[in-house]
Image (tube, rainbow over all chains, first blue to last red; front, side, top):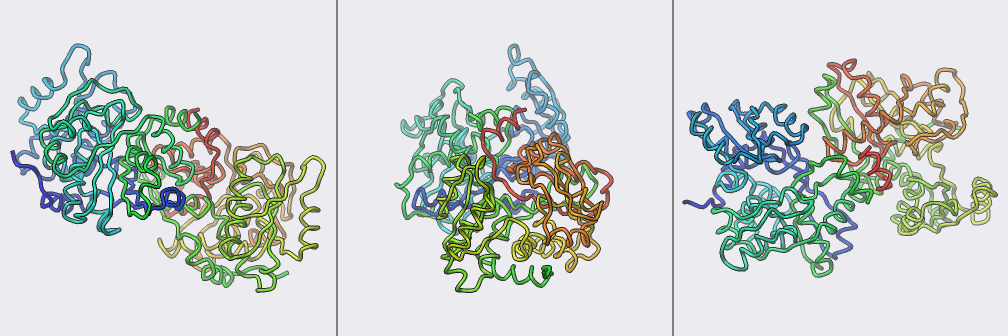
Length: 319
Length: 319
């Protein structure tokens, strides 16, 4: 098992160039004044299909050889990864099968089909998606692309940070949300090369602090699916690739409450006029909690995505 | 009475440079596909204090001579213009008095004071804000800066369009919201010089179509305060400066319903991940209503602002 390195992030940057958006970096006088710091928000909510996941998905498909591309790719997910694989495959002329629960929201099924993905549904109370996916992948010779524990997915996600450093220079700290650790480990690879003094922090919901437990105990800890509005961070454990990278390169894992995520979401809507999904607010909520502890620092934050259910989002804003 | 011209827009662009944001132009594959057109959204929701109003306010204050700057400026408004004057004055070291109703939302009073404005409140059921403002202006020798009917305000607002044309080139049509007509008349001056073939459309809420009536009848029509969620377009009549410019340079005035504004607001939040206030959605709602009629065209839309009450905004998104 070879762990990805910064060289893979560089390769990924070349592959996704022209397909992925080079997302904007936004600033806020209000946030800067509150922390006495200079804060740079890398806006992956403006990425294609609304989240950073496009980077890793596109890179993983682009890295396949021609024969494997012809056989197609497969993913199981009911979230942003499914749409990222469907869209990335469509752009590259690759067939994609997405295995989704049959009771997934109609909007998500439609969006995935809208991106050209072949959706195969299963009964999540009676069937196991890993088994179904493995069977289809074997039968059709398809490449299974997991949502985070894959070298090319990790390297692709790292381009979010390499773009940030290229635009704003070195940073004192970088705050990144953590689900399975694909984004934070990729970003940590970029930081290690482009801003060696930068402390990289992973941030997860306090209801599901498996990454914190894992890094502090030195072994991957698996938890039950956590109850949190950060639906992109409801993973139960880190991966075989992400954990060793994080252990070596991530300074610490912080946690924030759902109430802090809602406050951050409101801040982005009210003051910065942008829609950030709850998971995308993890890094910012930790920065706002740190407040004046960051005085004098140059701080990066990855806003990982902006895909919300309007009803739920609107109710949280009005709460 | 000398009407402003494109030369005044150019002067304004020089004055506001470095103080106002050069706001981004955003695009949407979804919107383009729906209309078969290429649509450019000029995002004044990302302008300082969250709306285009900063442009005109800053320009009007910058255009004063030193003696008048020392005497200070005065505005009456409970909306974006008040905050635009307060902030613009603070940046330029000019004292600003803002006359606001005593029952204005606490958040707006606080925001105006936060920008350094001296707030003078009045009882809107017993007192007349024009009389109060005129008295204070006379007593203190202050310059009253009205929200739209002022050559330097109009010229300042025109820089939103001159920046748009500079960035994307000539357009076939430009859709601009209309309250008192300051923004649309300034933008029409810019279009006349930078994109002479461009049809400029004003868009107002159908509940308050005074501008449509005025342009079609050839005289300024005054209506009662309209009931609409587009609170920035609840003006009752065009101005002595804005009307003749619009009559000469605006192709037509279109109207949209509040329901269409809500649909546009949802589109911006869901697909483009940006917060646009109801008034800011007027132009876009008209474009979405035109749909395929715009096929093959290059179309500009000014998103005028993003200042929302989170509770009301959230409830509309969830509706």
